[in-house]
Length: 403
Ligand SMILES: Cc1cc2nc3c(=O)[nH]c(=O)nc-3n(C[C@H](O)[C@H](O)[C@H](O)COP(=O)(O)OP(=O)(O)OC[C@H]3O[C@@H](n4cnc5c(N)ncnc54)[C@H](O)[C@@H]3O)c2cc1C
Image 1 (cartoon, rainbow, N blue to C red):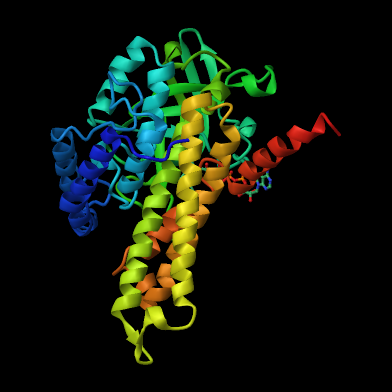
Image 2: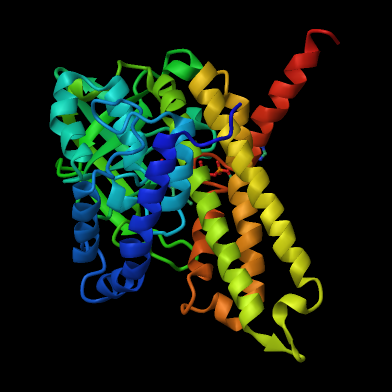
């Protein structure tokens, strides 16, 4: 594969970097301040201003490969841009490139009807509303999605939905207007054809956001990760995406790009943590020397550089495979990077925390919050072990026929 950035990507990298430096990094403290004043679960004025600015500059919906609706970039082209946005926790949203909306918009582009697109995709693309993906359930091991037991039962021209979901990211935000619900519709069908994805507007009677779940004590407001109760929720039958029993088919399509976007952002965060680590190592003195010259600190910096570079190349390789042979054939590469990227980011952030001493775990630096968020990515979109199992199975599969 060719690792060089095309002139188009290079130009976009420069523009996204300039936007981050001029507007996003300087807004981080103000965003925190606005979330902290009054009701934490209200959108902030600063984020809406950032969105207007990025949209005005044409830096909008860069994730979407469809050139009529987005920037028309391949996964390989989008990867370096997502990395830059991911260097700030508030980085992706100004460009309308934040999870879980990106994955949900891709689902609507690929599997939504014309009516779904008009009602939900258009306002998502314009950044007027946000969305959530409701699959995981507290009562069952959700790393095995065939376990999902919340039900959607057909009643004439409607679905009646009952069950409890949690970790429904984004559902606490009042801008979140639509959920993609995954539930049991065809319990008698083959194992991977029992579940369906159904669009559920947040304001449907019976939808109750019970509580935001904190992550190591961080509430991630105003986005949040919600526990949601579905109590006799009725939605039109045509809200089903693609068709009954086809939820897994959609999940395959959704999780490929969604997973790799997370990985790209993780690398951006690791890169910024390394920058903070180097600045601290050079700027602070102990025992008569800069921290960089003490003990094995320079090795930790070198190790971080090597690991980030390896993770970046592995991500680009997975993106390239997705572009050239498709998500299904690239499944092992996607799984590999899903394990590697957050683990590398965690190691680098952990070293940066250590180099900062007590400041590293305080709220004065972003490292502690970054660590908490990256740690969740070893679980979200499937825990490491599930991806390792898939990679191992694929490797063994090459030899099983011969054995
Ligand atoms: C911050 C955050 C945001 C999230 N956002 C969303 C969201 O928006 N929508 C949504 O639907 N879900 C979301 N999730 C949920 C996430 O996808 C699940 O937590 C994850 O899939 C694991 O499911 P579980 O929690 O039920 O763990 P379980 O399935 O109970 O697994 C627990 C542990 O068992 C072990 N295990 C499982 N399978 C294997 C295996 N094959 N081999 C070896 N060990 C194994 C692993 O150590 C695993 O961590 C989010 C989670 C977090 C933390």
